[in-house]
Image (cartoon, rainbow, N blue to C red; front, side, top):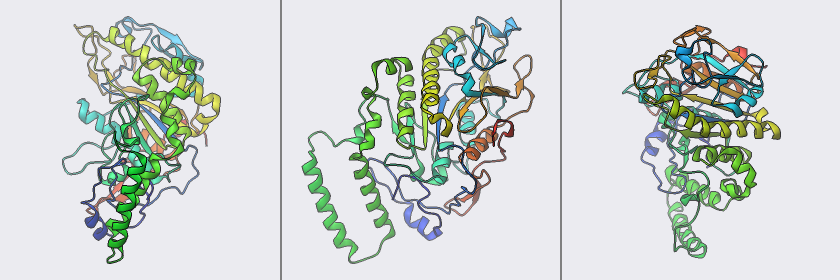
Length: 425
């Protein structure tokens, strides 16, 4: 059994019911809940990996990716700065990101359907609206459900925050959670007091008992559980674990990303992609700026700017950006109007996303907000369009359907189409 959840292409509903009780409190915590999956890789992929930079809380678009320099009432305290891409300006708190805009593109006409943090996060990360009847999988889970695993590491890793549920795709598509980049992962080593010799003896004893059990009966769930144990043991002894050791990087490289959890997360994301991880999500919160927006955004800019700038620069220099798609977005934007507490409130009407690499066009802008940054002026983009674009670049058909454990067919992308103007092919 590998970490990628397309191990089972066709399974009966009986298999599903047999497996729903599976659970294993081990390293990878992966079950064998199965479903019918049609692998949608019938097109040539332009990208192999995705790094999602998730800005939780609602990042202000007018202070970052969609400044309005001609409207002082909207711009507030921040000025706009030119970038390495002709005609594109960013907010002044992103000077290092501005230098890398020649490698990236912006979508400035993204609009959502929810103004509540939880519901909007769900909408942006799953491309579905939240309903009480069904839990939909997040983008990372969708990606790893359709792409084969590369290497020994989990296919989906979430850093400094947990990803949303894999929903009906099952536990095998859940993200492997890293609490803080740069600190030892407690699940990648044996518990204190347990030596490798004792651990191996325990595994040998378990194998003997399992062999005896297997000689008397056939049990698909038992076989899958053994596969999970084997995968966990392989992971713990894999040379690929070196990717988690940020001390292996030069001090100047670590410093360039910034002395922050987010900066170390972005550095780790680059290293994980080098080891074949398909989808890495790096999380940063704190963008709910109902008050003191400019003070908070200046502080957050000091965190995200060196990390994003260094990530794009390093990926471009190594050539890895060609096959790695970087996506930065939030659940919604903030109001152009500055409230009485010097803050900005929730605004799903229009906001922005940054996309770089993975075969997408560089140094361009798709869509625009109106003069007041309140709604799309032209070329409106939905969360489904973003998801469809990501899937398209990975060689995944956005219209691929999967069956839930109850046999309900669901599209990977709900009513979204790739943004053709960003595609190079």
